[in-house]
Length: 184
Length: 336
Image 1 (cartoon, rainbow over the protein chains, first blue to last red):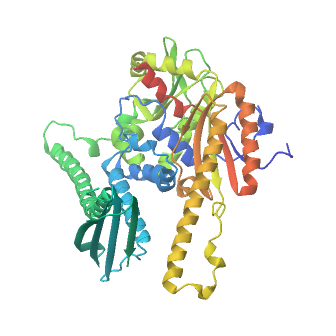
Image 2: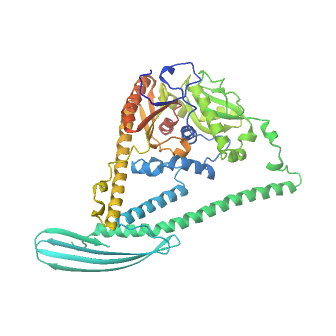
Image 3: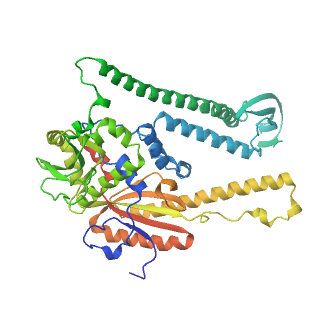
């Protein structure tokens, strides 16, 4: 089988007579993550005489490390079935996930706004002018709004003050929508 | 027309809410962590107080601490690994979870439980609470559990049970077989002649980077510092998006092709390199229930995929045969 392309096979039948062994590469013992994933999380769960709680705190940590560590990539790929796994929908993982989501959104917002994350004690003023003109049925509606935000980073916590003003006016015209937005 | 940008206004409002919530969530998480730690400590103290109080009560046997552990180990419990049809070969030369004690069959009606004896001083509730949190103990036990089922799998269709399913004695094992009989029989029939395999797709570091940032083509002085920074940010974001899209395509391609020759297919969460020890980024962690007759087809397909992805920096890994851990849940649902 020397001409076969290189690929890894974990040989999990070494103890057996050499059945199909010509196709299998002698591998080390099976990956611990593969085993734990199965023996802790899968298999039929029936009540034994000894009540055990596989969700003891530290073990939960192992589970989370094992299962959710790559959650971002998995979510990007739309794989999220474990969110409905009752053994994983503990408060901790919910919070962790919510936390991460919110932080991601923050990062994204800051990126879109072209803002570096404010450092402690730093004040960022975000000024936004938004003007929209809608012309329909011979009438033009113009909306303008002005927003000023002051973001202060204080001991890792963000506080925000914001002011807003807006106005609207109408006049005649064709039928098109124009959007203009400027940020600074 | 009166509210010109309702969706944008809504999004702005939501984003602002999210921003405010982020800080609150951190505070709340910290508070809950403290609460949980407090409650664990309280439990420990309670236990200790109770033990001490018992020691002072006349005529009441002191519990736990002063009870010699050897006493309970005198009557070993039955650790059950999995279920097979009665009469099938039991892997008697395998090493069980406790001191390598060999497995044996507890038969009841048409079914048999693969069990081995375990000392209660290592496997009762109190001991398990500690042992399950001992990573070395957990690994040793998980590997032994798996090794027994592997040996059984070589001879028969087996329904794997979760780690540490333990009964006081043989009688209780029989009762369990009686009670859960329909579930096991359904699972055994459904899994007959089929085996679980795992297929992973890994991207070597750098394999997923999208097209090089266009910013390189710009003249160095062509952009102001601010604009160059923004351009850089945009390029980074684009490269990230490209990588995500590519990862998706790769994973989808591999999963679809393996799933096409499998009886059932499931996606498992991607593993953390810290735990699984793999290099590169895991893009797919799929499990497939494949007809034993199709094993060669599966191997050929994995090889073909491996050959296709190798030049691109992707590695396709096959693991198995596994006891059908990932495919027994459907049976429980079907039978209940």
